[in-house]
Length: 163
Image 1: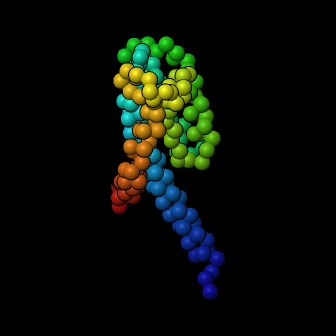
Image 2 (image 1 turned 30 degrees about the horizontal axis):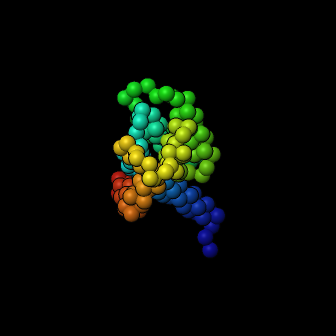
């Protein structure tokens, strides 16, 4: 029969190991999700119709590793001042609030322009200048096949780095 002191020590060691593994997996998963989301953001920006550049310039990616934390990964700087900078700022705030209130890891990407949804769902028969409707949907569909590989690679990097 095991006495209480070694059993408590073993339980403490298991708890430490569990925390370490959870941290590695969580960090790797978060980094993988962020990479996939940024790839989706990049491809959606390329496919978004362009008039003034505001829509493409309003893209954002926000993530959180655990509740109460959130960070903006990258919001591109438009070549000219955005006509509605407050819309992007509000969208990023909403993204940060959403991600920081969820069990992590979680990453959100989107567009802050007030008319982004209307353009995304727009008339495909219309003649679009550099881009077309459904730009976000197409970007997601394009990146889904490799998402698992990207996440697995990030998980492997974080686990191998600790050996």
